[in-house]
Image 1 (cartoon, rainbow, N blue to C red):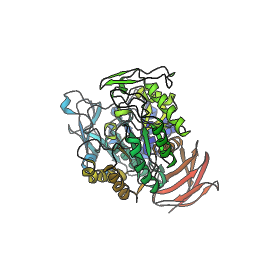
Image 2: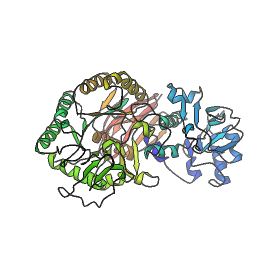
Image 3: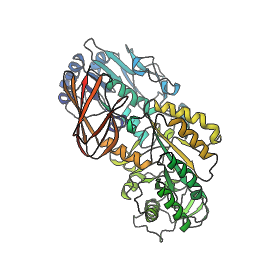
Image 4: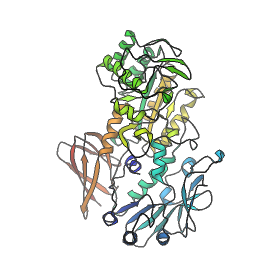
Amino acid sequence: MAHALETIGIPFVITRDAGEAVRHSVVLVYPNVSGATLTHEALHSLVTFVHSGGTLIANEVLVGGMNEVFGFQKALPSRSRFELRFQSAGLTADFTDPLERTIRLDDRAQQALSRWTVGYTDASDPVAIFDDGTAAITRRVFEGGGEAIALGVDIGALCFLSHDVRDEFIAREFANGYEPVLDVFLRLLKTIYAGAAGGMVTLGTVPEGRSLAVLLTHDIDYRYSLGNALAFAEYERAQGIRATYFVQTKYIKDWEDEAFFDSAAVTNVRALDSLGMEIASHTVAHARTFNTMPTGTGEERYPDYQPRVLGPTRTRGATVLGELRVSAFLLQQATGKPVESFRAGYLRNPWVLPQALAATGYRCSSSFTADNALSHLPLHLNYNREPGAELPLFDFPVTVEDEEAPPLMDRLDAALALARRLAVYGGTYVVLLHTNTVSPKLEFEKSLVDSLRPKAWFGSVAEFGAFWAARSSASVDVEGNGERKIVTLILPCAVRGLTVEAPVSWRFLGAEPSEVQAAPSATGVVVTAGPGTVRLAFISN
């Protein structure tokens, strides 16, 4: 649940003390409201809180005495619900796409039990309805301005499925589609939070106050791809865009291809680097078996490491750590710069990949697809792709790629339409283009850049990774008496282009200390600052 709130930019503190919680304007009770998790005194304090004007959001309201507060009759747990439909309510007015109005929770065709949900009967104001007619989300607004919202879908569990990419049946497409399953729930939480009494401050998801983060990435995994890549890089340099080139360091001939990472390849890699592009790893062997390779010892070194692809299902001498360590070593030798980003060949992901990336010095990856992740926002990776142990790593999943039918230029209009969908809520738009050919892929990229430039931020995977890591570590506090408001940012590391989203009725006055760069934007204030404490002053009308 913390990753869900962090992703959408809602500041939060976690406490087990209900008395401490109700000192704030918005309270989220998680994982459920029941006699097993909350005392009678805690339940009473929550009732008093909402009657006094607070906003109360609760996951799985199971205790009988709270049904009146949330405006329903009974809570019915079940594993036989497969779909959720949002109603025409104010909270979901921004959900205009059919894929946002109706959310698939599981695939009924699998003839298996669905995920655990709680349906509420006789809801006075259902925000969403399950396919069995019970309410998936209820809302009750009180005369004093307070409101109580009950969730029947566990957003924390859904975020786990998304960020660890463990869904098997919800996604309709592998790539190039729109699967906003997690995103609609995150947007709903943000709408509730931002609308709470007094106005709330959130953190934007795109640098520089833009509405869409675009990452142009290229996979180099073919003998002629490095030479072709220069045409893309020269165009990107002319446009002031830093793209990411995921380079396979193949130095052994096998079933996949000739050995092409030679002195000529090093010259081309250096040329890409001199054009300002990010050089990133795309493994050594580029094997379809990467997701089933042994972890390795962490002692793998060039040239003793000898991975050979023997066929589509057979690879000899390869390990996960070897693919990460040796490819990064060779690329770093070529450019003299650390390798920060990684993409798995064929987007095959072993369970050990997050901790293997951390152990070998990477900071971020782009190895999943947004459709499979059920989200078009960054993913916070966990150890072994399991809950319980987060790592300081993020994956930026692929949105549009170049290998599925129909041909790429025939998909330009669809790709632009998808970008417009994501720009509504600050999504991340990762483009994957192989450089095995130049035309028509470069024409596609040019058309995309020309269309998206007015509203989009463009950058490399490493640049966006640095921004996202700094944003995720930042904490926010708001204080104020009357019209004057002070927003305090605590920044453990430097951040560039962080948007502090404030209510539209707030007018920005200035920032401290004086060396902080802070400029008003359409949605708040864009901040660039080193590590430390930043104070932003506003006056509310």
